[in-house]
Image (tube, rainbow, N blue to C red; front, side, top):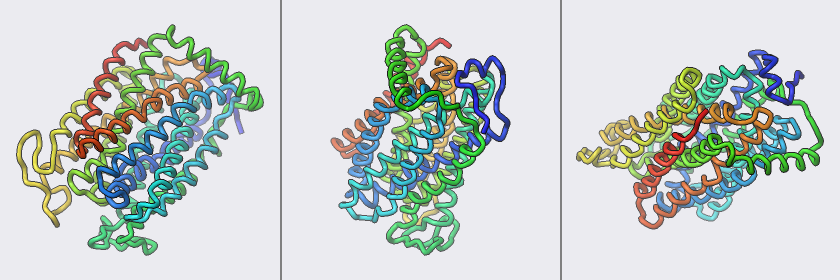
Length: 461
């Protein structure tokens, strides 16, 4: 297999990059990993856990928040260390494979989550946290491969296309679940009016629980092209030597951050607005389930619509990234997110922006009430902004970070994306538990986007 010089700056100077098949295979990582975020943490399993396994939706939101907070803390502490070691050792794929195994095994465990079984809750939350750790760590090392795949002027498009590919993968996986596997417990039929495949029982929510094994199988199948066709860095030194050198380099990089004011400001901004965005995606489905009484079919359909707008937003944002620069794309995305979240807080089942409306009626068609349609529109705006925000963020990091320590800085990038990632879920969980109000818990996200936008204004490319 062809290898790439370990110093990415040499690659830039020589302008030598792998063939198109290698780039396409790299894009499939986003496709492979996305069902974990789409099916498990956002649109299917998380709402199912909150409404059918936990004692009540508010308690479910709180418990899920604490599990995500624990996973975020582990990711924050270990990401920069592992990234520094990977830079020193040279290889990326072994790390992706190792953490991919964690993701697959933990995701498959979710099948055991039967409705109303409170005794299984600790094991389920542990499995979800481990799957999150596996997915996020694998993503760190996948991101670190980007500078070797395309010239610098095409990094924005590559990043945007990767996020768009992931969103499309999420859409396809949602369609499979909603159309063929998960059925309404009352009718016994899927969204397409079919009997669930494999005899999945709607009453015991087997269609919701199957998303765990499906996520694991999906990852194994679609990450395989990355290992077959995308070149890796060559091994530079044994793991023990890499550990020593990597930790030394990490210490020097952290000490040097105060001198790199723009990079430090960006990492701090990323820390704050990523916390808000991840919390928003993680609890959007749970919030809708509690506010409107949505079940898997409604939440999954909403997820498909959101993912479609997210894919378009990421793709279009990648083009704007190369043309206008990633910082402007990030700022515009944050403004749209801020306005959308503020508007969502003014939508309830019987009111929209302080205007009284007819609440959803039992047996009515999907999204027939004005409040539900307003939530759909605002959710799609969030999807359209979330894709380019995340894609442009990793592009901006590549522009600001030293090229020969890119995995280490992607580790710091993951650190700032996770070091306080427990804060958002924790605050949501605490406020929701204290007030017994999902709306009060979600209101805290406004602060994250305002603070992130303010810090971003201090960054100079």
